[in-house]
Image 1 (cartoon, rainbow, N blue to C red):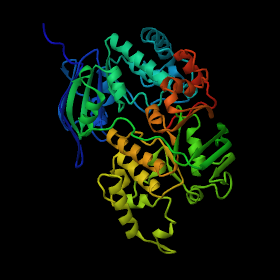
Image 2 (image 1 turned 30 degrees about the vertical axis):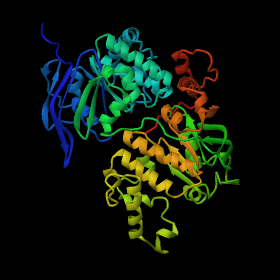
Image 3 (image 1 turned 90 degrees about the vertical axis):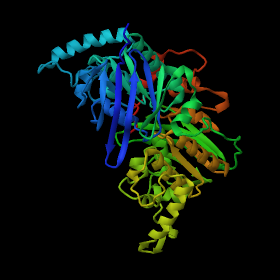
Image 4 (image 1 turned 45 degrees about the vertical axis):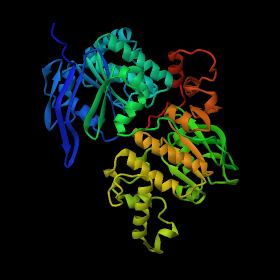
Length: 534
């Protein structure tokens, strides 16, 4: 009997962008009816490889075989025709269209739209029954939660007859309950013969859902192993090239005096949506308060108010003194003078100027510092460069070149530049939003260590993250936000992901079993419809 042909086989794939070789002679086989994980550090070449498979890029060398047949994929339409679908980390949906309209978009049968919509409605009913992908076809995308939006992306691919699905970081914006439901859907798809490629940095997900895992490092494929024959520590070492500590190493907190008090904080955005609703909490020096929640439930606005980017009503005290929430001194410059440092959630749009050099970004927000001035009119650029060089070495920024543009660094090294700038200002309060979003596992370990060191120096830290592992590992106390409100506070050692996930969905009765449908209904009904993070 002949051997079953791989659903996908890539042979000798290479791709360069100028002097940078993103993929080097990569070969990989993905067997049909399996879930195949691909992991690697930032810049390892995972996204480039999948972009070649989906027709976004053309390889410089190499061949692609689909079900044993050599296949040319010059564009995404060719990939779709070959039975490949891709669900992107940032969904490609038109928010003001319905689910049905999004599914049909780009796959219409002719000039008249009505027959396509009728056909799609029938097909969606069949797909929902077959794979458990229930979703209201008439719901507007902007009115459903991110878990449902992800289902729509999967339905789009299946409607286009995809037998091979590529999912890029699919759980980044999901609650634990939604992630579990996604895994059940993927298992169902696998049972029906679909082939799935899962790109994720979460080793626990790799161990839980995949059959096989491939590891990439510096543009090369370094290993492919059966998931059952490996473990997270081994995979981390294959990714990074050294042993990695997979847990946060910290001693118990030793809280000091209260640094920040937030009382009755309310935020209404420019569209009139009430984003933060009567929020109160305090953080003492020497402790980390973690804010858990699905993106879009008020955490971003909370950071923006504390960082001076957003107006609010209520009261915030820093070291016992109120700060301005609405007037001329409610800006970031005034916050920095009060001892507040801010690592924003979106490093590229809020934390860095991508076309500026690293040394210029290191002074970003602190350019009025007298230590940076030669005189009232001129900055001491040499001093800033020298200081940047030292900070880059202390924070292991690679390469440690102050003259490189911010856009020339990987995501993890961009994050280290922002962290170095903010942490080394010796703040009383550090605001940290999504500290390891899109960061590889080696850099995650380093960033976590720096945050813990600052805590142990007696600083107060407000941590916002959608990663529950990170919240549980770093935080000394955890507050959960849903629909702009704090639903409850827990100690990490007295809670777990299941309980936090229910609170993230607005369910305070955490002792009762709740269905995924209940969780999704709560998320979908959140006031103002949770905004999706960039």
